[in-house]
Length: 270
Image (cartoon, helix red, strand yellow):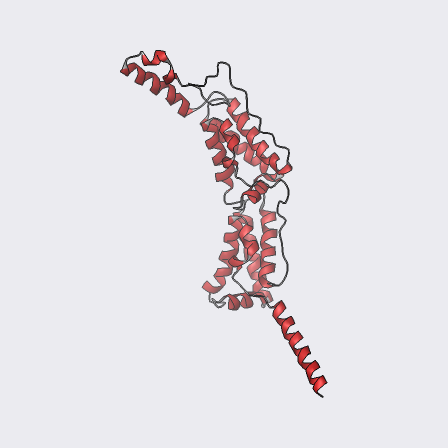
């Protein structure tokens, strides 16, 4: 009898331990790990549509109440998913909306099934762990082109690509996006710089940035232009012989050109 009781106790303990092993905390959708790697446009669409369930008094505010209310009601879940899909499609742009809708659906799957293993593919080799504007080689471009790169690559895609540097690179360098980004970059450089060489240099730099994901990038430093100098005009002995007013005029005129633009991908030398 004692042996049977002991066996029953062990069986009960095993069952309890098994139950504890599979217990998973229910959290808000924004606290799910994979939510953090979505593009901001998708994050907003998901969080807004989930939160609206409480705003409309359909569900409770607590994490467990909200999740149960949405996920245990097939009709309600379908309604949330439909609104979310529509919001993501309209917010995330035509070029990557389908990918974002798929990612959002996976997040919702994880939200309703906390114990389910749901992962996204992320770069594991040749990961680009820096934004394009953080690369030291961007200094090869003239200042006007650097600003255009920042605007066209980073600014234009901030809402449509994940915030992590490696995921941002994978997003902005997708075949569906590269053409649009290159066109925007060309237009931006033309409005900021003075010649086509700057456009070619900037677009080429973006291409090299994307090639980093394939491990094939080589940012070759351009050779200096003919007559390249290692000193500024203000360092010449002859400059020192000018009157103060003349020095000021020469310095202002030369450095104003340097700030405005460059006529080559090497920057302005003075």
